Image (cartoon, rainbow, N blue to C red):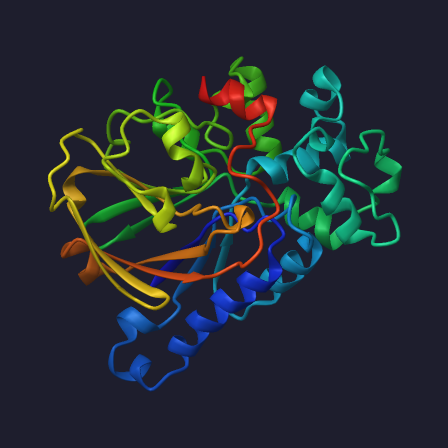
Length: 326
């Protein structure tokens, strides 16, 4: 099973609970008889490890140490951290946007507890955030995207949404932070229209790919997208976006048992799976699982961990997010 885990945002305790659920299955007796739905073959983290929540450093330490094959994707908040550290173009143009509603103060305080910056402080200097090499290397080497061929299905894992006006292969060919920033600068693409930042509602499938992404917290979907197929954000479940707007009652079915849920969906019409169920808003942290036989039958497995406490309000929209959704 390949597992994709949504936006963590410094929420260390729910991350540990979620991984405990997955690891119990991986090491269980059932994994010997049914490895396809119990074994952890790969973990794909969809970005945004930092900001808002209180424990960004602990999150990074924990996921780096996990004893499984891992893929770490670059999220927009990880991008903001690097832009601050490297005095990137958005910092030069707009000032310290990382500390202007994006939660950077809590990340700095997580790495340097003696700082304990209040959320309203904006005049933090780069010298006050001297990241150790191991952490700087972690962020600099985050992948922009990742693709998997699972049976007859192609899946593309990204943080946000690719720009449907730009060839998909061109966007999926980008490697890391440096590659990404060189590309969008050279091609004069506004950063919020890139696959790390973009939230625009897709109207069609991304070529042959099913997209698996985060970045768009499901509690906010009804505020920024027109057609969410009758989805109820209060369920705190992953959102499945389909190509046609028809709301057939059997488009998605799911069986739920405690923290485990199995979707049965119309895979041929499926555009994307959104795994950001808003953990930082007090909703659940989510892992979505894919394997060959399951995809052929339209099945997507979901495991979740409760967070119990949120660090943002669902109504909050930073200026960047408002621009992105308009």
